[in-house]
Image (cartoon, rainbow, N blue to C red; front, top):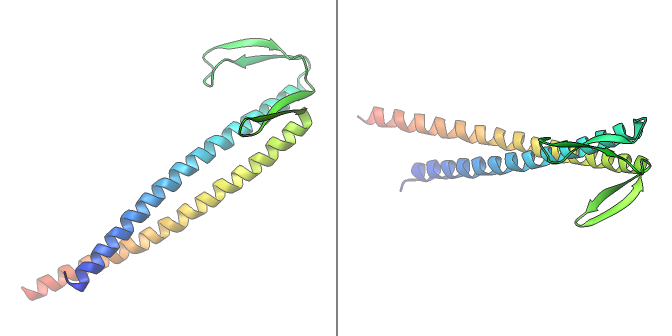
Length: 147
């Protein structure tokens, strides 16, 4: 195998690796964005609960809202929040909103970092793709001149 063929193969392998990495980053970003949406939904719901005049709310029995029930909130001043893993804590609603706001900022920062990495890797992919195209064009020109 000639040196130019090895270089072409190397460029193709780099492109394949970068494409795979971009796919992984995009999947990771989607998971993070889904988590961000869930945290926002929780924070918004708690804010609405805090500001509600009475303690009655409409509660979805599933994530898509196929079925809902009316519920009476017994304690509007406290909620149970997830701390991580299987740990939960009963905290004042204001503290829960603060925790979720902080979580939202952190998750948004993580999403931004992933988006930046995707952009950086995509730019690298485009650079290598351009090099590969130039090398293939040059190789095609060499073949034509030899004939």
